[in-house]
Length: 444
Image 1 (tube, rainbow, N blue to C red):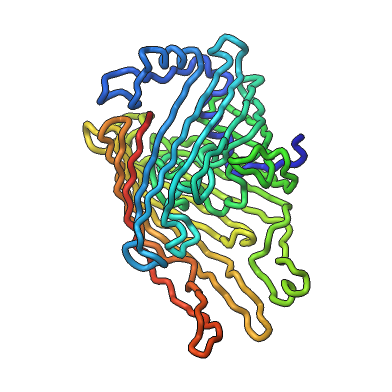
Image 2: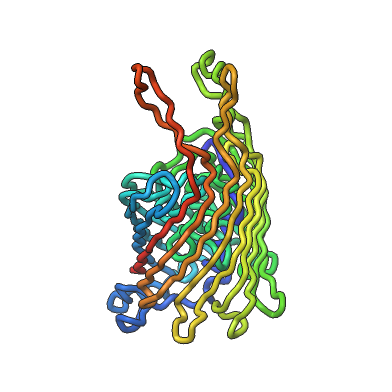
């Protein structure tokens, strides 16, 4: 039985709502998987026509494989190149199109990742490879991050419950969003890291309000989720929490061009391990000190500066994010990012994407109070990233990427045996990172 709930950050359901079109989903066009080998939307096509037939009845299956190789070519903690990948399968069912009842939407997602990434080798707080974080950050994992059901009772309101995946369904942005599979690699450009105290996959409930009955125009969300969920567990035995949050997203039309604005807030009263520790407390209590509760507020926007046609998802635009939090247990106190994104800028290359961005995080320093000195470990962090998504076909994308990062971690510490047999503490300062990477994504 679910005993505790958390509110997912930002617009945890904006992606769900926008993709399902609310109560009016019956009128939405079904995706098409047909076409010849080089022009169709997926590698495996329409499965002899059955995939298009299922889509017309409200049942879709979408899958992808994303592989990334990256290396820290200068600075950082370790320059070795690493390779990793992630597979994802998502199924959607629309009860209205299936002829059952209107306004119901079932979502199920299965994903797995393998081998490794360079995330632990940069010294940065922000992982440089978002794709390898899911369903869990390291090792070979398989998880079910999303198994949820949404029901709209009118064109203006609905509810959702189940196991919710909070990354691609939250903090939506036209040019900088997702799991690192199609746009930027660095997590700072895919989600607002001020919200990383919220579980990626967890049990939850929520309400969805569509003020204009069009989810593409405005969405307001109030959610409650379990504070300790994981993609690899069912979450029913978790009792920590809760977190509360609310968010809203609205479409704008400045200069006659497409844009969006998002605002939100989240609060948790969960007991977290504190970033600040005293050696005496640890010795006396045989445990680390706890910190009760945390909070965050956040904002993001995207705005096209040029579109070849009104409303078309092509052109070049500006994006930005801001976040503020308590700084414990997530060390971020303030976060900023901004950049430019482009879609289909070159004639005849409608599926290409590109982006360049900068982020800065103002971090609360982790401290360890020793008998005679207080040791600090963190500093503020900044980073640049640029990528170009080259679509060889609509279903095969190759992406070169470069990142330059001033990492949060000041130094790495190791222990060795001293010349007289004692233990020697070795300190090595961490220089700015230059990280190169290549990504191959196949839409199946």
